[in-house]
Image (cartoon, rainbow, N blue to C red; front, side, top):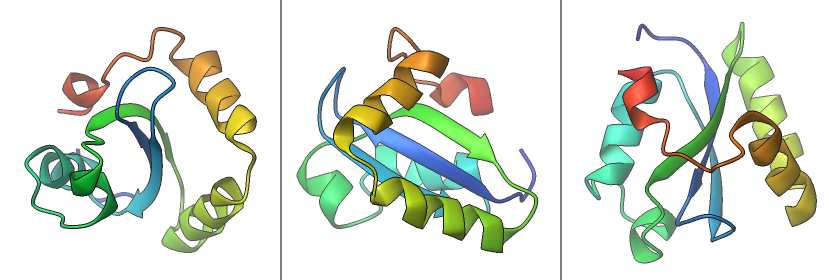
Length: 96
């Protein structure tokens, strides 16, 4: 997966704790989360499952979308995940 702006959502489990992030290298960033290379919220709360991601044309648009999504109600985030990934599968293998 080449360098391309992405917004992603990680979850601890189905309907669990959520984390929204942005990156230019999705595979590398998710690997970092999964291997606790990123100290902070995801490491503390064991949030390692990639349940949603979307590609953007520019980093600016990805950052704008990330900020927008972080302001959403939890129900909206869950709806977005379930519309695209109803079983909350870890999409990690899909991006390799």
